[in-house]
Length: 618
Image (cartoon, rainbow, N blue to C red; front, top):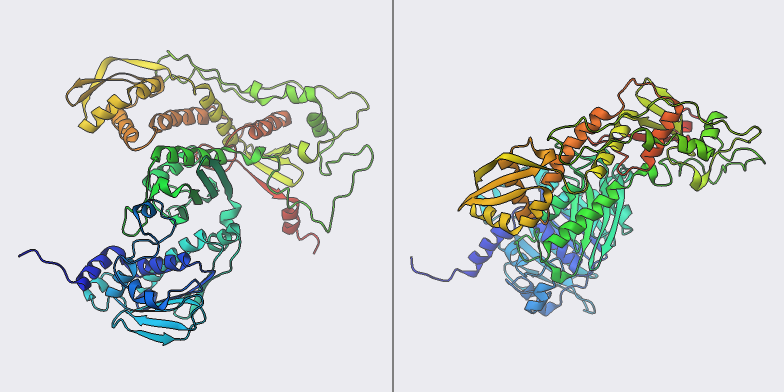
């Protein structure tokens, strides 16, 4: 066939195949245009999952009469005018092809009243004729009978319920990004979401629920032109799928492999297996530092300095998750322990300011510096590091004999009044009361009751200590016979480029041929791992990401196993001083809220929770 120009209508239908995958794609484009128009309230109405109708009404700036025909033309936009604008896109839409593509596969009309116009105007996509219309302000985009002229495409659509679920996902993504805009979604006349404008926390609570916020930590970090903020869940709220993962770049929902890797690695030490974290995170940076023009649906981006973004997100999230609620200064449940209507009475002279303190033994333990030092948990369970040149796989060099029996604590001076620290001086996890069935520790703090899984808590403490001891240069195990294996040309170049980094990790890698590598030494802790598989995975990581977590992950797997075997076992009887020592060490340990497998190590019941349980005050 001879080369010829395609008709405009066919060009638009081809573009629709890239932009309009399903009704949710239409809703995304029209909603983003409403956000760009400066709207403060947007109403969405769907019929039959969006296949029959998608109607989006906003109160934005509107479109002037003479620009309405242009809005339906390909590559007509008000958002960019030069290459510099394209490199610093600050709006959700910018290509100017979405409305033209949608109009090519549906019956679409736009009614709009620009600011200051005497009345509104309406234009139908076919025929493109202007007519006066009634509208207070803003714009209404009405898309009916999607794919009516391309029945083959319509056959690929799913059921009404499935298509509406996809539309609901798009609506939620936009709503989370713009809490300042009031939004409403109705399907077949029934309102599904009615979201008033408000704070980001209120919007997250409305869409993800109280359970997510109760199990999440606020993330806030800033470095130069980079800022990340939002909420990230603890492992207790982990999911079996990725349906609760929302990441935004300058307000745009994206799926980025680099960022996903950074987040997953930040969770690596507290979330294992096939579970997925839940988060709502917003990354802000100079628009020049990110290219949003890499995908027709604008759901993928490319960072100009991807390594800096990866490391920034990874460290910001890791620091947030590493902070232990056990050492945060206020234990869970303390805030709800009392109320303004029922204030705690002031302590009498000489009495304890800690109203629920067990007397008198725990008071002595809490107040006497000599007793606190005497029961230092670190002294009773300090592992000894194995030498760097020790044989690979040797684990008996770590001594983790915790909870060694100790004599009685020093007695208080005669006549000393028992007292407990209160307020900021009170330990978040309080003081031990008893041991339950040799598995759990019962303790009390200012807020109420604390329950601790002693094995899980001790496992985390030992694990973090083992990592600290081995965070220096790893011991190296030289191989008697070098491991030689074939690699691709890309791997050869990666090994050459990152030779110094590989050496610092404990690998001695050198070319053995045009497409062969020889490994002469590996880190001692990984000497038993399959060398070729390990090095190939490491090179792939170095090629795609700023630094490798493979070595750390493999090392941490070994340390986690050692910590699990070294931790105190169930049915081990502990004394009160030993229990208190464990509580104090938890408060000083990062990530003490979860064990190495992602299980919680402690939970709290406030006095208000207990009162509700026993119907007190009713």
